[in-house]
Amino acid sequence: MIRTAVGVAVAMVLGASPAWSETPVVAITSIVDHPALNAVQEGAKDALAKAGFNDGKEIEIVFENAQGQPATAVQIARKFVGEKPAVIIGISTPSAQALASATKTIPVVFSAVTDPVDAQLVSSIEKPGGNITGVSDRAPIEDQVALIRELTPNVKTIGVIFNPGEPNSVSAVRDLKEAAEKLGFDVIEAPTTKTAEVQGAARSLVGKADAVFVPTDNTVVSAFEAVSGVMEAAKIPLYAADTDSVPRGALASVGFNYRQVGEQTGALVARILKGEKPGDLSVQFAQGTDLYLNKDVAEKIGVTLSEEAVKRAIKVVD
Image (cartoon, rainbow, N blue to C red):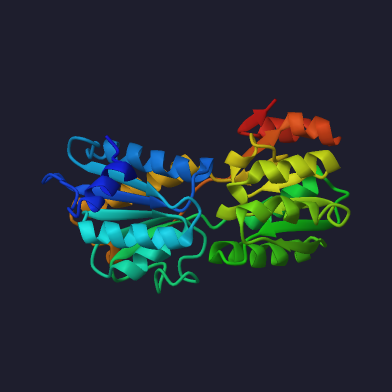
């Protein structure tokens, strides 16, 4: 029984707080609607249920989406803090940062945050302190760059599309450059700050990049089809940091299953609901590196996938 923004908005218009029962509330806020972040939310709900916290019974779950707007994420954070839930989950760096600014007392669990220290959410991975802990999805960049070399050995230059206003993306691009240098790749940046500008950023790489990589950037991933359409037409291999982008047009990805990231997040929330303090719980890192391949895209852009790679893949999109 996830309560969304509608009922809350009505209560606010009427000048009243939402009529929550004595049931503990777990509030969830996410920066934007896209498959990876949605999978985090679903995984968190599953883990909570497995721990004995079922929505509509032992707890009530409420959810709001900022629709890609950091200012809206701040408003959602302030509203949730005012409603005093038992725990708040912040999915993505912008949503988690908004929560960190809004409260120093209500337990906050972040998820899908690349670098929580760099984002100033916690001062230490091992001992977060304060009211915040969570799960980092720092991507296995070296594995991803190695995959580009394996599947497309003639690539010399990698283009990367990202929003420089997202700290998680800045960290990812920094890691990409370091890993690319080790394998002899050059990196070309195509920055974009708005979803509407993503297609233009993709087009700017045509004729310059031999392959394109998209990190776990909320702005770009929410408009991923705009990128995949450009790359398919130009026959440029497109790689993604999150595996959910492979069915959306990426050639390949080696990364995390974001539903599992959500399950790790939900398990942390359950421990807090049972009495543990978030500051005492070490930040966790997403586990596993699954290989996803898209044979349909490979055929369209003229890339031959080796039999060994296909056998190694957790999922192959036909």
